[in-house]
Length: 143
Image (cartoon, rainbow, N blue to C red; front, top):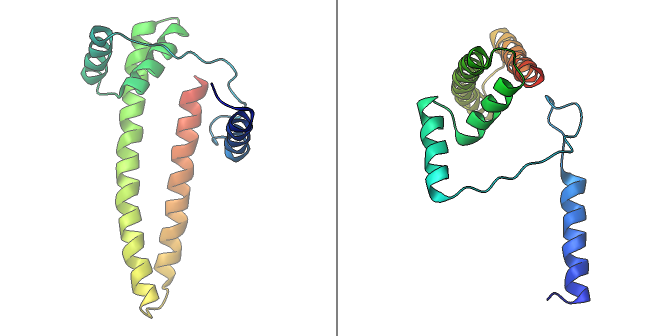
């Protein structure tokens, strides 16, 4: 059983974590309801298998199930959600590649290279792309 001092340390740590938690852009309000299911090994295996079949992580598969529960046509909702997640994952992969190119440009500039107008335009397009992905995520969460 923790001592009074240990309890105070635990509580102060929990307060620090709560204070540093930031809200995701796509989540305008705090979600107050939480479900933390526990699975037996066979149940977990079934969930992982179903998620793999849908080309999703277990968390993404669970989110798709929630989307289906809220839909008037659950089968279509899962298919739409899956396609949307796959497209967002592909855009994330492409943005990661762009990030690699930006690192190369930063290295060039750090070595004394000059900023070209093309680079400024590229940065604006990248910022717009990231914003579009954020908007798409927000749209999927609201559905």
